[in-house]
Length: 332
Image 1 (cartoon, one colour):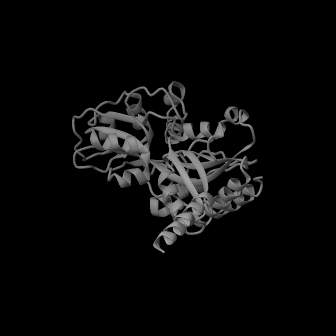
Image 2 (cartoon, helix red, strand yellow; image 1 turned 90 degrees about the vertical axis):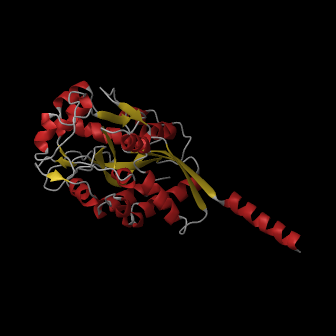
């Protein structure tokens, strides 16, 4: 009897495994904490769909979507017109999170620093090389900073977090804009590379004197200090979902949802903030997977947003959610 029961259970699990729909995605490490939380929560809503997400960087996520090896790509940088022109079908950008890129560092005593765009661009250009440089000291009066070499840590992979950060540096520094520019990958003037937000956070945590840029959740998870940054209004702002929401409220969001929100105007706006997108084909190659994916996205951009602040993301405004639902109606 036990044999038959075991065989029956094995058959049941086999059928369940076959009937489960697997949806593959790849891209942004900025999004990874949100996706892990959402996929877990969504399994209670639709246990028949399983998600396989590879945190390989925004650039790789865009490429894998173009080659149609995944059902969706995730990126903190919108795809360029040139890349979209090579796609077999129209690509839709669905904003799913908005978050802060913070400047983390490894200094004795973990002081709470204040930094601005001029100093940050000089550090990442390699022209400010010591923590007790007069320009850093001027922003942090009364603080004792060590005579310690600055070790710059940046992303080594194609990264939407890099895009947001270099978009900001290009907005506040004409020198950076002309010599380095903004992209998911740039020719960094100085520093060490780390793969993913995880890699940069790990390097900063291990190396005394290091400074790097990571999504806020990674700094919090690794217990790394991060600087208050001077915004366009002249305020020093601590990164938070509320400060990102204030920045997003000023953004002009076009119909294709490709937009930037760095160096936003207004009191309380965090200056290195950005959206992240799930990118999908309007015409789905696999109709069954496409329906499941759209159902998930409808949930993620509405009810899923209620979970976002738990991981220090800013929830999407209601008017943006409504516009996205209309765009998802066009998926075939």
